[in-house]
Image (cartoon, rainbow, N blue to C red; front, side, top):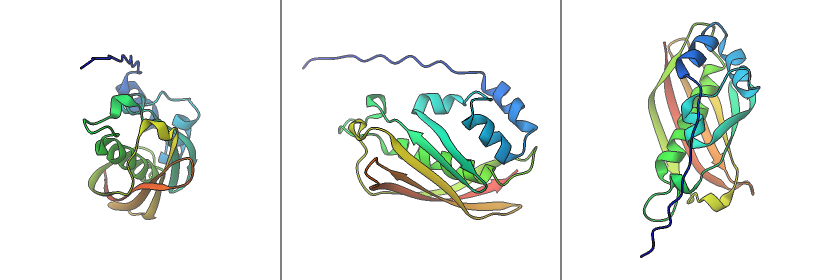
Length: 162
């Protein structure tokens, strides 16, 4: 058995500085600032290889790049990767509906895995959409698609407004 080792170095900005910079912005402007590189991405985005590419009220689109570092022992991207991406896009979609100084936290997420995700699928697209905005709870849905438009995973999420 050979042991071919891979190395990945991750650098990231101080997440507390990012938090403080977006706190004064409403959610839509905060997400647009992240998309436009005016605010550094959070460490999870660097770790998981995703970035926002489109932001509208109630909807965000991310590009995702799963790699070998996200694999499980059976030779596919771990389901936790898809869950994390879906939690991110549903949360960020919810964030676009919030006033400045408001936050959110996920209180429930249900994920359905429809096809295996592997690194050779290339860049994936994840979309989060608010299905019901709210002052106390926001409901959202998310999808992950491959480059051919095939649906890989879906999620529905409930988010508590803080």
